[in-house]
Image (cartoon, rainbow, N blue to C red; front, side, top):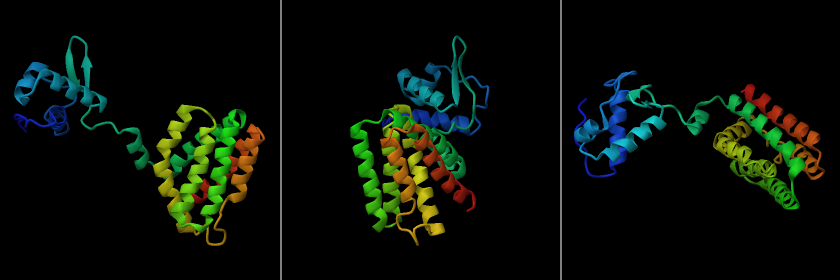
Length: 229
């Protein structure tokens, strides 16, 4: 598969794709040392800076590795999956188990660190969840997730908040499917209200142990239902 000169459009993206195709297509197997930047630039018809950026992108994808004084070598023929992609491909039960670890810890921290402003936001989120009992499944799930997000935010740990945010797209679809598949709202449109109210009360009362226990029990029930699907 010859490289060929590139068209004058986003050159870094084109260079990256051409080099990626060479690697994933087997032209350069694992362990191969790539041609020097100057040679690649001449073949692709671009500047060395463009080649350098393309190699940096390939390194970020886990395909190549620069070895000081030796050059750039192919270390994989398939790009490493980023975190969001890995989450989308993971079993929902695995994702949910990690969600429990994150949220239970966040709930305990929220009980210790919450401010009055946090309590206002959490209280409003609980009220919105109750109002959403009259909404369709998607609206109810979105309101439920918003309440959980408010609790995580009250932990005042940006890493926990970031991790939870990454989980939301996968969780949202799983919860929508779960609620509809099992008909969880057919008899009780505000499914899980008592547990969520108890969680809010525990956080308001600065009871970290109760907050963790309530949320762990609530999430465990959902996980059990997911395992039974």
